[in-house]
Length: 292
Image (cartoon, rainbow, N blue to C red; front, side):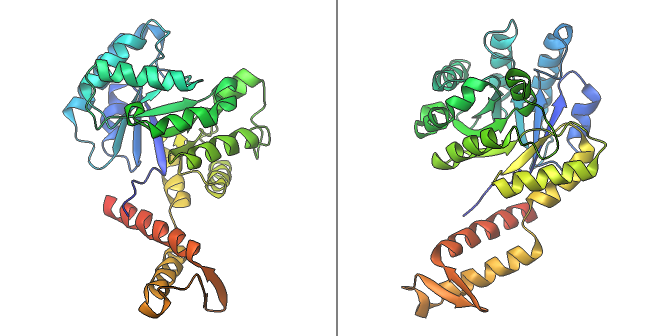
């Protein structure tokens, strides 16, 4: 089992050449080079060219590189998609996905623009309609033509569209986060949490990362490099968790236990499903270690 860590997914403004250069040195698992919200309208074209050249130049190491384009209904969407496809990042992040048709149209645009087959599609979940259609959106992943691999929660836009308040503990968001997470898991798609806006408040960030981790999120989107360290720490399995996981795997792998569905390990009843969970814990820990 080999899993790609997506603990920290850092948005970097495509209009800021210095930030794009710095991105190559940051310990984020994922870099989202942004052409949408982080770029003013009069800087869109320059940002598009700058991001495309940066991706083509490479130098990002093991980091996963994603380009967030403007939506197809905007004046910049078509040109963004063409440039992103030609640059060949690991994924293209599409905003304002609300229906399964939006996924298939974006995938078609990627294909027609010549995006390499390895370039995946990520989808922003940030509208009320997307919350109502979460299952059908995630279900498109069953069609290889969709390229869908990751859902990204857009909690700021969701708050704007629903008039919900982003208060500590996010009580207004929990139902939507859980619905999207269930849809992702049901259809084999990864999912990352929305951003935490108060980037100077590490305690608040940690609390929200822990909440997202405990909900089952694979990681979190971030808006400032200082958020990467705490996020990486919280979304990684702890040493104790990895140690216990290896012990569970070793016991279930013993020939005498091959047919057993449940075992007692150190006074705890452990089922075979826990061994499967343990294998994932070890795989993600090994993948994180490989990042160096």
